[in-house]
Image (cartoon, rainbow, N blue to C red; front, side, top):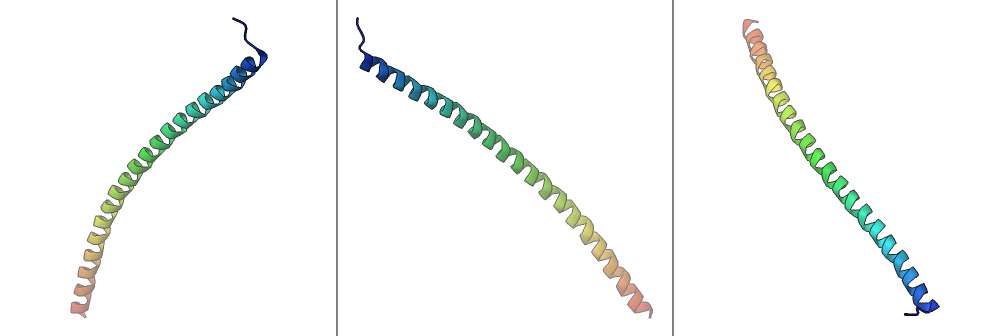
Length: 78
């Protein structure tokens, strides 16, 4: 089987295109996985932040109530 120069050129060019496609595909899959992992970590961080803020709101509400009670007592004493 005798391959002409044109057929060899087509195979060479096609081979380069396939190599470039494989490199692009691997890069795309890697970046896609990294992006998914990053989004999941950010959601976990947001959930932890929300829990922390709810705790702080509870503490601040109790402090505000104590301050209000103290202010009312002081006004009644005067």
